[in-house]
Length: 285
Image (cartoon, rainbow, N blue to C red; front, side, top):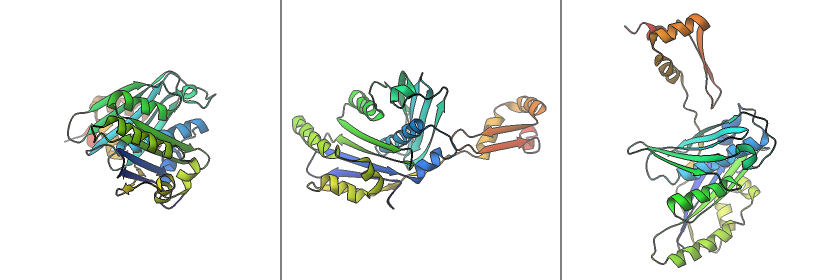
């Protein structure tokens, strides 16, 4: 991939009522899956989900966190990507049965997509939509059509061989009373964007790719954001979770198991706590 990998770019069309986002993922995606032995189809699902979460996170107009999770009754119980306004991402999938297909329905069965937004200031928001499309991109477009009522097009890509992912989002900017012209503009830009190819999003810089797509249009790019993998687990967070058991619960577990062993679901880091390490919890005074 190009030197501009792991970057999200936002852009605006000066002559049309539309805005766009482009995300290209390489090492951050590799970090998310490197300690997991996912089948090819699950790796690609997580890649698309990561790209989608980056695109959604870029739309937040406040500091906070977002979680995009798919929950189903198929062989993949759930797949989730958590991110924040700094484009710090982590993700995981839970596989409960043999993977025999590669489509979204094959993996998830009957499923819902849950989008949770947690601003640092303000109220938590959660939106739930049934997965009724054939692809994750179609499901997200349906979400925007029903919940936001804004014309939105999304393209998602993931390569399980080279561990790369990317995505593009277009959305109407409702800044005109001429709704018919808005939709005409959006249709024109959508047709241009639909020519995007997977190898281009993996190999070209954002400037090169946007020029190829829109070289006859006036496109204004904003300051890019770096995307990174940040798990967020720590020994202190594990100790806080153990503390919730109370002194009696901690002592009972130690008597049976001699230590606490906690493995992070996201990065697979394992933390171990014996009696000596837990002394401050058992003797707080």
